[in-house]
Length: 405
Ligand code: SF4
Image (cartoon, rainbow, N blue to C red; front, side, top):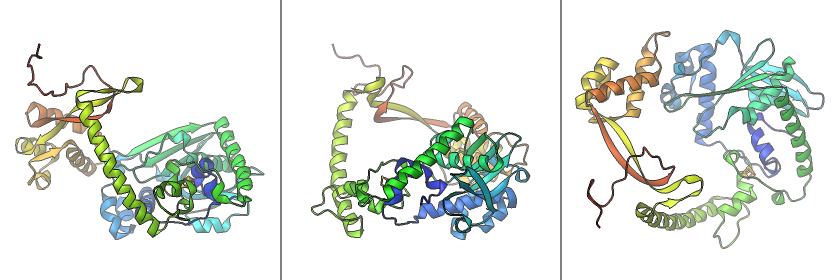
């Protein structure tokens, strides 16, 4: 019987064999931090930031403090329901609510055989649509929300529950500097596509589950592999990790991983040398690539703030409390400035807060006029699209020196 979570739906659809191979659930540090961020973001709209921080595990509180929840898309706590567990019966195309605020384990306990279950972080309804929001953590590329299978699955659960044929889906993720929000509208056809995909998945899974040698099933690698519970037993991953082994290992274990690591380090050393030779070549001989790109020298201008010259402006703009943050610094990067501006903006009363990026640009303009910005040219050898406005790379000769006849 097909048992999948909506968070694993993309993996199930892209690599159905991952459901059939031997499983080994893992809980990495990042995964558990992800759960903490998830729970924190869920609590903020109902409990407020400070209470949500206090409710988080102590070891993660410092990291959570850096999340600028005010700058994120805020939700009206009264208009939405949180942590809504829904079960979908694919045969009857009916859905029922299992509960709100219940744990994932509890939701699975309440589901009937054959039902698919999902717990939606945030759920709302309008006259003709459901609204589904999911909180995310981490830094991985999430791709467009319209193509996100987890959100598509949630949309089908919620739309079926409320008898709607339209869903607005969104992802909220606090970033290191900029929060991320993406949303999309799914209509009648989109919901049919999800329903068809789930039905096909169930059929495909049925065929694969009865296979006598699961390790011979076709797998498909991609971004969905990272937290795959079948990873240690995946034939594709094993083939990669055991590359160069004298004896094939039946699975990825400590011994085979250690041997693979030492082989990999030798390979990396060789790869570094090849790259260094290529870079050396490309400095004088830019390598044309498909689509008009080139592998060669690219010059970028990096601006940094000269703190002794900028001190007065920074204090005037960001308040005297900025003094402690810059007292020992000679230089600040633009990212540092952004962090200071974010903190300043967060301390302002709601409704008076300017956009962080506009503030940063304005202060940078002021610093530039006061000649408190230092511009450093950095040359890297990289793939890039040549631009007529690019800063010219430095060559062996002096600037302005005539080429030899
Ligand atoms: S690790 Fe292997 S089994 Fe898991 S999703 Fe990736 S390719 Fe599929």
